[in-house]
Length: 167
Image (cartoon, rainbow, N blue to C red; front, side, top):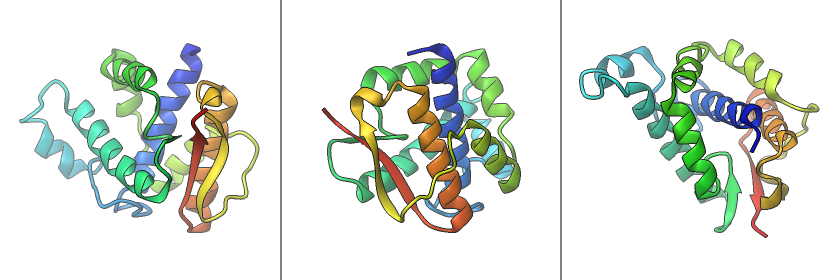
């Protein structure tokens, strides 16, 4: 996978994760990206609190997506294992920490950033939305499509879950 596409995928995951939390659009019931969470996690994970926040939100989002989608599909929070490892390694790097630390702290800024990753403007439907096959998972077009669907769903006040069918 191209490095830029991997970086965009990580950014999309961070932004969708932040926007889905209870203080934003409440798709899942976590608050890992709120300031109080940082104060709670830093004493326990002094060097890796950003990873703890990232994985906490990912797990909450993964569960909601898995409940809404059929078994065997890929989505932004459940990708092929090799890609998950690449995302973790990027998140654990200095660049990942910078991406995490520059995460917007308000809905509008986060939506604007998500829209900047998006491809063509999407018209999401509520619920599961098929966007391709597992062969497309490493495509920058697919990352843009996911970002566009999530951004439009947040703006319309619906829950839409873009997914890829396994081949």
